[in-house]
Image (cartoon, rainbow, N blue to C red; front, top):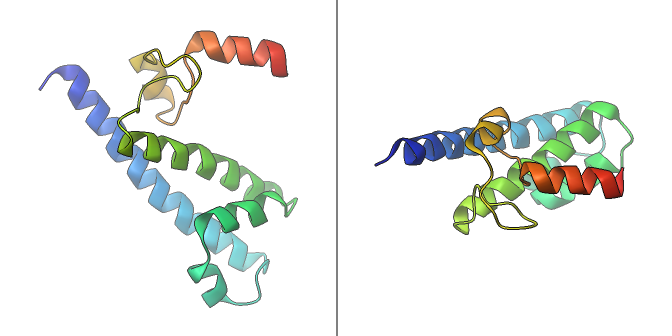
Length: 120
């Protein structure tokens, strides 16, 4: 196993742990803000529905949690698809240092700059 493989395994493990913690935090924050009438409804809700409700709540903390959850969820699924570490736009490898800074980073540096230039 190469150093690069070890680093990717660590990043993937960190992402999966963050995914679990974010899901737990999102449910907890939704209960605190009583966005859904019962704790059981929140516990049984689909993650995508929770994200959608949190983003539409206009509560800053919930909104931020939902945005991060979307990003981490996408990264976890890219692992399952065997696409982790590849840019979602150009499919080039994302630099290891960028993934270390944010393991859920979906774009390479060039595509982030391009996207920022055209969409900000």
